[in-house]
Length: 637
Image (cartoon, rainbow, N blue to C red):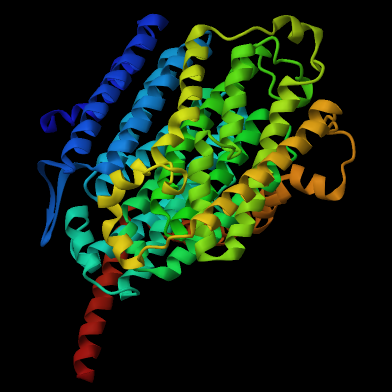
């Protein structure tokens, strides 16, 4: 199998080339078939690799050629597929295939159908490159590639200026984080003389906790993760990215790209374990992001915006897990989140499709009897993300909260409160969309219909995964063996040895589970009473809101704050440099020299009269001047 792993990323790349070149000549059915089939074959190969690693326990490390050789620094082009990356391959290709299949129905009437599938295939290629790279340089190429594809896909409907602005915003904010990543890689090269995982991680493990290079390396890599995974303060691009087609939201902002930062830190776990200060920063930033995004999601009325801020909040949970040393728990949540969040985004797309493009939940309601498959699957996704057992989100979220409790009671309390908010805003979304009376127009009500099979089948598959996905991580206290923890143990072995084991008593674990489930149920019931039973609907934008509600609805004015603190000062500086430094300074100097030359030449050209007698006269004067200088000069000497 080892000799075929290069096909896993190459097949989606082939799909990009075929669909890109044939976008105007191939039929939509052929384009959709090629784009989806190649990702499905890639999934099949990923599955074979996964079972090989599961049976042997040995990672696959294949070097194809020596790529860069500068002095003592040698960087091969090589792939590493171990327990961590094999699961990521399954998520990327498996969920990616379902989203490709869904896109066949969702984008069928779009004129850019071929281009859209080409971009999707290219995105899958770069994401696979990111997780398969055996060194930080190949990871960085994939990292930048998914950033490029996110720009292309978010701004896919570029004729709308606001959509194009959202794409630019995502691209620029990601570049800020990427600079930190790149600087971190440079320090790794300086400190270890290599960037290959197989060389630097064993060297790092032999060093002591708090050694000099680790804080600077980890904090810079974390800056890259903050940008890619939309954490405070670089999170505002992700909600705006909802401008892209809904399959893009599901692929990029639920299952793959935004979890790249989590993967990178999990891959670099030994660095972070040896830098406890950075881990504390990671936990605090993650917790703050989870709470902040949840508070914003409470009042949003756009169904995709609710899910966008939910994604930011869940990513915060993952960073909280990484920060408190729950590497397996954080990665477990990556896996379960890929299932239920992709399901919720695709379900939202099905609702929008049924509503003729409407995304405002205030204009929905009463849809559960009209689009039953969409309602049933979204109900499952909502229960899963709310952390209610026995669905997948319960197990992964509970593991993170348990580690947070062991690390800090304060972290745990804030985490549980955020979990309660999650349950409330998700069921609020569900009730506003599917319960009560229909609040849209008569034309919209007439248009409402269930989505085609190409869209509902992925919903059903993801719903099943959202139900059973958590079973791979059932804790021992509930009679399980946490298969995922045992499978990933070799990846986190050295970190776990340094941190030591932290086991809670069974009674404590049961209490923690009861608390998290209890607050989720309380929030669910409150949301039901308010939005389903009493039929409460958020006020129109023209009406006045209470101060705190208005603050949340306007996203705490973070974009306006950035506009005031960052954009306007930069605009002022650019205007100053243009008008003063550029025009008066640089242009003034260059133009002044040119003008001086012209004016001088105007005076000198008067000597060129064209009169031969005048020229002879000047020559005589010159000869006399030379003789005078010679005579008097020699006399002085």
